[in-house]
Length: 277
Image (cartoon, rainbow, N blue to C red; front, side, top):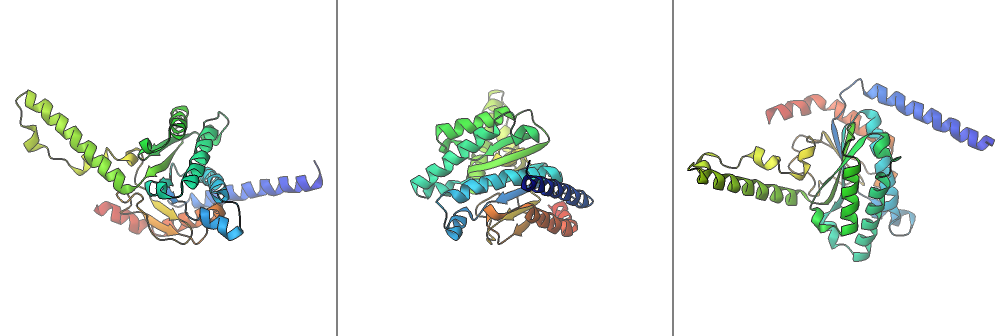
């Protein structure tokens, strides 16, 4: 090992030790259970640095996996990312195909035995209308879920082919279908189920795509945007919204630290608001 490599190794070790120290300091305060990311700014990153189209998305997925590891180190059990909106299918076909190929590659990479999915014992889940995905991407997603089904230390959700309005419509439809089937069964026995059991909020919530995770404590959006963009509208009534002007491919550990510190500063107020619901 040459001197340059030794210096890099020492710097890497010191950096890891410093991050671990920061995580221990943060753990003194309340740690969010669930953090969600709206990963904005990948295309602007390409334009900013005059890079080939798609470079920002490639780097952005690496950042996403790095942020997952940082969240695990901080003890954040649930992580959700807005990976691809239903509205994104309206973009140019070559761009959609490029992103789908990149997602497929990422899912396959995470399915490998030595991936961070198993290193950190992360269980992967997909929320959205997966029927809109092509078969290779859909199969890669299903394989990733199957391969990580027994992991339990952290839970990562890809919101893909997702919008909150589609989620709500799908949940309401399934809740009504479930109630209709129950009414039909009740009628067979001479009961009057339909008059005494209307569809309730709890019936809708259990059919949500995101029913597998608690409501997010923090929603982070990058690239200076302050909109939810049809993301988790049902689940974010009491979430801390954190916006940074940094483009997603440029996000690092310190942006996560600032988001958590902001959450800790407002934790008492947010906790009171949750109790009022």
